[in-house]
Image (cartoon, rainbow, N blue to C red; front, side, top):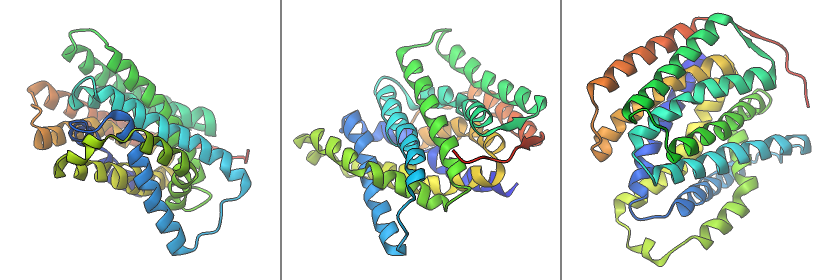
Length: 291
């Protein structure tokens, strides 16, 4: 239960990502936002690692850090931002609802977690609910935005699962910190190349959104998320993220005025029920062997 609660703190921070990205997109381009937020987070991570005098990661950990970089530092933010440049945060929130199921599948295959049949049924029902919602609100059609978001989910699930496993071996704060530091030169270079003079005229709201994406969505949120996944298991704790689309809908309404309809409330209730059922199911975990 503690792992679920810790993970929920991270989910709450992540839930603001989509509407806040929409705010940043008002004046900044998707590539600057994606790599710029990683650069800002990388600088914060560098300060943190230096301040606690953390030892350099062992060579065998670098491969895992590379997977995390590809998944949650480069792949997911870029694909998500490109998708949101084409549509609303509320639509994106629902499609991203398949992420817990994808994360569970990756965790089960990659790290030999064995969810029960009941767990898989609850997970599939929950994911099916959010997909049904997306189809209903999209008049039965999936757009290019949907495919970008689906691909983003795959990248994110890989990064989540790898980061969760590494968090069982080293401090979760150092997992995301070292991943950001390793990728900092690349992220910094691409950020500079995508900077435009017009960005200097962006309002305070846009830059506050950018800072939030860098410090909370890209960094501090992972402190809690990886710690929760490591403590409670990838398959079970990832189910907490099923509530993220509905937290995002509320945030979108408050921050950028996107409407919450009755269908939002109905599907939110059903998905929360599926989360409660899923977390009550038995998860068998085998011992993890080192790569």
